[in-house]
Length: 417
Image 1 (cartoon, rainbow, N blue to C red):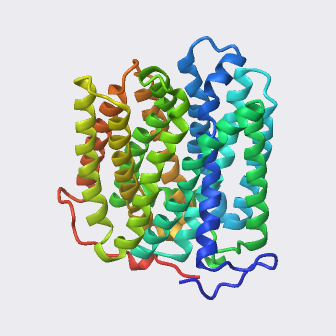
Image 2: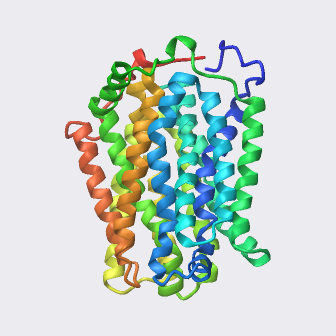
Image 3: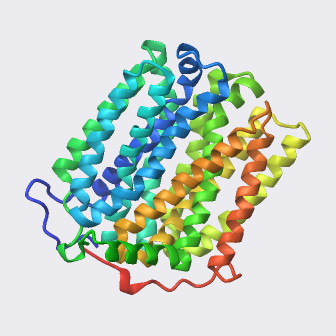
């Protein structure tokens, strides 16, 4: 459904494949800044004189909190000034913040710049508005699934990249790699990304307009409930990201294997996202995502039982965590599409508010679960089980107590180029 909107003078519209890859690359700047850091956390804690090893998780948490907070204003600005300008500005700030993190002289300064780093990375949320400008319904879910599939290449490769950099250079050079990656994406978007927001859809930043858009996002049942469901599941995923280095060091005593196993588990998410892109238009978002959520809860329950009985082994952990993450991929992309569909006419503010709730809520929940790490995998598994059950309750609220309800597209909010 790419079509008639003219490109900006400096950008020619990409084809479908390039568009998906470009959007995935912009979103990947967020994940890269988390996953490539994981092997470096013990080194950062040691070299910056941090006494409590658990505080190293704040390098991840501060960034995620920045991402969550930043999404409040980037989408709003994109509804006023256009998607392209805002995306380019955010990528430029991301580059500057990455360099500043590399130059930080102490742990407090690093956390401060990581917060700014996250604020800049939050601009990638506007890419969801770009997708919503172009697509709706099951096709939008397919595009999001393909984007997620490519995006997941980053967590597959990033820990190994971080470990490789540590073998050759100081941990600060990891941040310089972030800067170089963002600079390349900025140039690509500058040359190839057109403006996707019709002039007539641009909002004036008056209080009534903003409040009206906020009211729509926060009072529309599906929009709010599915956003909360994604936030809860995202918290479970973030608790895994925060604890995985400690789990491999303290539980399995094989810290060197963390990047490879992390990549293997992330690969299951990529496979699931690809499968979703193939089946969602035929089966529907609700059939796929609701089924995956029920399986998520079942797998998490088995994992919690394994941890309680002391039967955890590395191969068991990999198998169960891979299944959990595959189910997350099948739920998150579809839940996100269902949350965005009713708010298409205020897609920028909608993406901002939903991204804020999802990211900040997920960061806080992930931090709460992560602080319970006790040298076993039980906090991770129990946290996933509780997250899945709570997410199911919210989905039932959205669906008025019935799963797998037929989907009726919101035709009034659909836009095309």
